[in-house]
Length: 296
Image 1 (cartoon, helix red, strand yellow):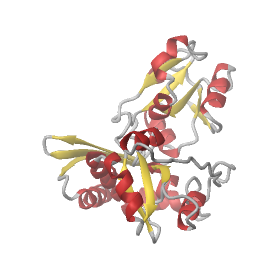
Image 2 (cartoon, helix red, strand yellow):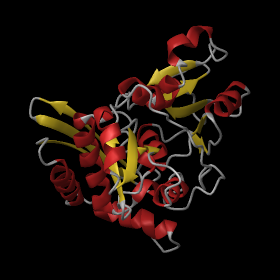
Image 3 (cartoon, one colour):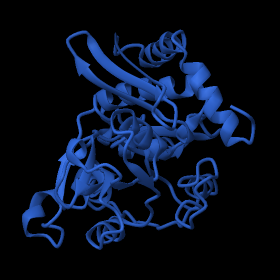
């Protein structure tokens, strides 16, 4: 997608795709920046000139010498439940739902505390196969990934046609900060690369994503903590929904806030402090203490 866009913008430009296997690809997902670190190291070593990332995989702390130089227009940020028939509300008690995301399990558990969660790994096809074969009663995936693979356009004629897709609103399952956003990272001083990719930059996606990541950064938990944030343009500038939850969903705080497109980071941080005043920081600290071996 990016390769074609750049070649269309700059006829004759030679764009080579370099595939880099990351720690996350090797299953080492507990490492901070597991899906991006090796790519960033290649960028710093001048082995590549532009790095393509899923924004939600990037730690909120910037890497010295690197810059997020273009935010691509956001795809559909919703999560979707996929099952062999029933939707979330009608799944029988004790149903097994597959997801590896604490953010998703905590929000689903808040409304369905009678289901069972089981880790889900592998590519999309592997996950679908496990659902079809009965290892799970339902799984939860990002809708953007299915759309980028072209599956949603022809679902009824695909090999997964017997499965039912149940997209959930951003209010029902608040997306991860930066979900469905692809970004292009460059070396900070590489003016030529930055200029080449600048036409791909989508300023509204950038503003909304930066607000979401500022909200996340204020809690200091990264993707290991059940935190959701989603911003979109509205008549006030942009509006944002955010949530913080305990892994079992029993503690769940959610709110909404409007802000100016001129100061997205400030708005995200202020929104975090607002929820923090209702106990959100305590929820996050308890989760981190448990994760790090302390007593929550």
